[in-house]
Length: 250
Image (tube, rainbow, N blue to C red; front, side, top):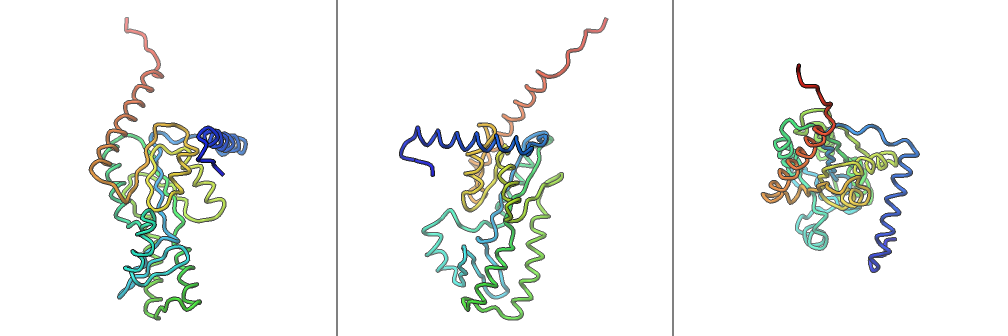
């Protein structure tokens, strides 16, 4: 546990966690060559925070609860835990488009982290089995089509170039996600605090950027462009220092 009441003890604990993580990562050989350019990690929280759009109604999943009434969901969950509001796909798609435009030709890599919708389906099956919600035969057919759409959601991102996807909740997936967040330069997150906390705890440098896809506005856009321009200038200065010297022509 981190003792927040004692700043000195808290900082020492956080530093110990940081040192142990990086020492273990190096011993285990989990330090492959970093990709060139800005490393971007997008965390899309699904699974236990999902909205299932059926033809005539909407089911909202929050943890192990299923809401058929959006008003009840707003009153019970969003009012008390606004950070856990479900993120719509368009939110992080808009952020990615802004990043792509700001990057221009600057090199960058994208890793997508998500627990996926596997837990969504399991939660619905469990809710039906416990009699908490009724799903008709036609709605079950619709769910099968939704499962295909959910898979396509992670395959059709507005990004030029390869995308590294870590989708799932296994121990191996979680470890790979932590490694990606630790070495990220730019983190895009939505509901919950996993990606924010992990990145801030283990990040490899201090001048990184964290964006909340749900609250991306004009100020965020300006900050993003300034940050990318600053990183581009830093990379240019580093290249100039390492460029080989050439002799003047005779």
